[in-house]
Length: 111
Image 1 (tube, one colour):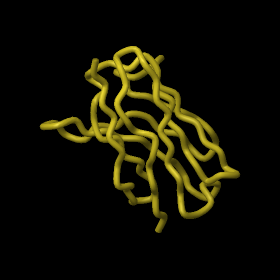
Image 2 (cartoon, helix red, strand yellow):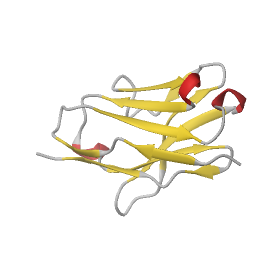
Image 3 (cartoon, rainbow, N blue to C red):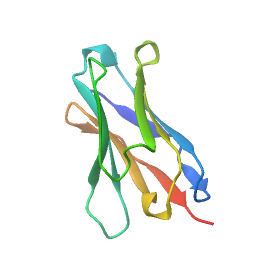
């Protein structure tokens, strides 16, 4: 089983950017796919983006064109670059892979 640790959350103004990191406890080359999910207050957790072992990416419609998922195999880390942030992007962001969840990192978009 893999352990995942997210970082990079914080408070940002609308239109701003943040980059989240998801550090894995083992080589991500051996992991089939890594995904980001988020959960806003009072809402269900929703899928945001994923990247496969081969580098194929997919995004939820709500973030397409604004968020970019990438991976650095040498650092066993997956990133989520978030640009043009909106208040509705406010949520706890979680990394998921191989039946494991990270602890989450809070992203707050507010002026």
